[in-house]
Length: 420
Image (cartoon, rainbow, N blue to C red):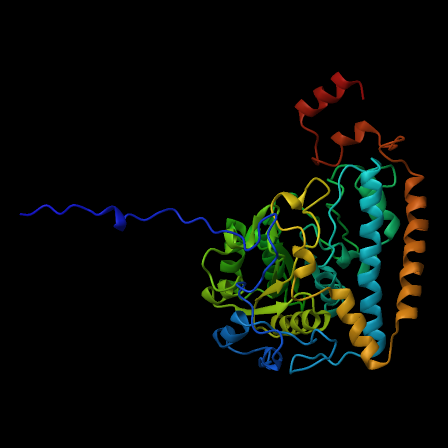
């Protein structure tokens, strides 16, 4: 018997995916898995009937569903043909979300709030989704979908009071400032433990099917959290029980400082993962208001008519830091946000309305000023309930309340020790 020596050339090396652009580099997205954005071919992906066999959506999972061209034209079979009033409402809701983000970022930097997370560049995903769903459909958001609440008419002062953690906060300071919650608006409490809402959403959808209602759950998670078990549990249960759910993956390219390739590995797209579970799957332009609206509408119809869940990857970009605690210049090229080839969702919808003859620069500027004035006015009202630089007005004793139905003995002792 002859012993064979193993050549070192045959020993594998650990592969660690590298982002396209590092700090100091010139941003270049040419190697990103993205179809040709100039050719009209990107607007000719078919729009099958919602009850299509899941495996027939493979082309939609690997391509990129788009409606708006970069110069503002609406093209292709996915165009939802929305009227001008609906489009203007969508534009207003996105601009309101952006104005609120701007104001909350300022007050956090002034030390009046502890923490905030902006959704700059991702407004179309939340706003268009809210407008495409029924108000009774339960949404299970991650922490960058405040546009869902604002579109559903949640009182802005209540949202701001929660960010300020003051006496006007309906959650009494018990949650991280951006972990909003509203039963009235069918908005499931945001959890700081990433990914858990995915399984909760599928469970809620299964309950709707069990009760025989037409309710649909719509969950959102970042691409980074798809590497967690909760995401795969959700897909398994969705597939097995044909849950009427929409599972949205917001691929904004960055999970804090880890770029999307860490969670994606060598997979074709994030949407493609749904096919492995037998789920209809779409990959869409997340900066295209019309594409988001059309995809959510399609998935909701599929869910309501017994077709089961749909996985949707929203291909977008996080323009600013992960949160007010993050400095993105440490891990990505400085000009990368401006180089993102799919542009800005507000600018693209504005351009579309202008081409329709239903909008212009003067009206846009006037609306921007109107919203900024309104947001500042409501903020002044919220600030009157307290800030971190004054007094929040929160009674410390409430930290022990509304946590357990019957307060455990150890908490009773702690409360007594604190004298509250």
